[in-house]
Image (cartoon, rainbow, N blue to C red; front, side, top):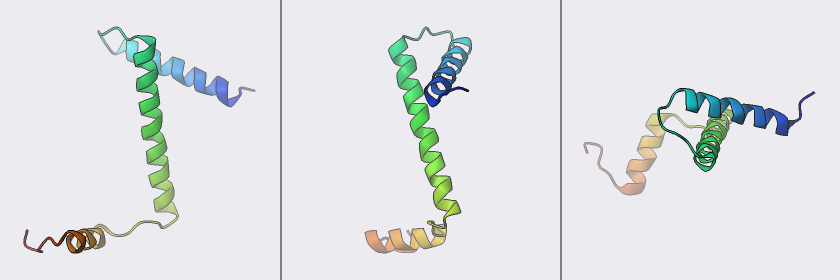
Length: 78
């Protein structure tokens, strides 16, 4: 049974392999790690957003726009 660390390492290995296969540019280990971390942050943000939607912690877009116009005193016709 793989641990979380082993799964993460396997995922990183696969990610780096894909980046190298799809690029003519050589990546340093530091660049690959930075790309991986950025990707993980994006995935975490998407998961958080989906959890908010599932939990009902969202408002309709038209309500959000109304609040923003009110907060920043933007007229309706602008």
